Length: 73
Image 1 (tube, rainbow, N blue to C red):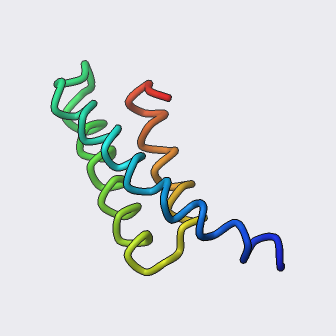
Image 2 (image 1 turned 180 degrees about the vertical axis):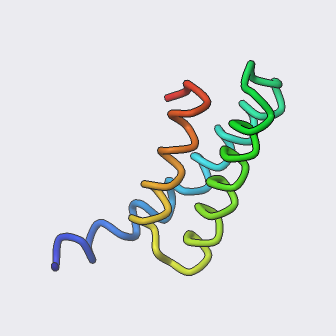
């Protein structure tokens, strides 16, 4: 449990970078169906919400799902 608490501040700083990567990929109009793009945007928004709630580990998991759908690292 202590390790999770210690790692949270580091994850907090990663969330904005991940949001930026997702936003940039969306702006480049990825070759996704409208439905898939809608899901990416929903995951991105959920990740941002979790970040603001200081649930950084959960946010990173959700943002990772969005990035996988976009095919980005």
